[in-house]
Length: 183
Image 1 (tube, rainbow, N blue to C red):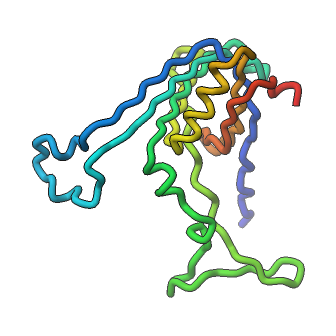
Image 2 (image 1 turned 90 degrees about the vertical axis):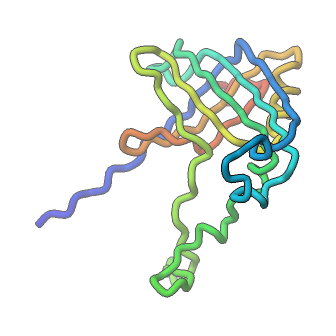
């Protein structure tokens, strides 16, 4: 019986020229304290909640098959995003007994890691030339992005996309003032 070859992932580097953005920031008392049916399920959560949301829209300039498509990107700046960030050690594969796995490479033993979870997924709006991305990030990322967007230079977004089967994962997202096509 022939072994099926695993299909390789498709990689794409997407360039988006930003044409609009909006921001909202909020501070308040945790909504679980406002008459939640089961407030005792959330006793470890902080009393106050803080959130900053940045919506960025732009037109794709590269790759050629998506040129002219609209990208709507939402960055949710939440303190929990920084705290719940997984560590590399969390990706170390484990055997059935819970012991870390290692594999030999060029005569040395190296840790075996599972693939990292994506930052987010890219969703295509059916029937439209529009794509959306929603990412939970540390508040500093939202603040830095807002500084770049409010400057006098044209802003761009660079997205490293990995497509496996029908899912498009965001491997990295960069807000910058240089055109990613020139890099």
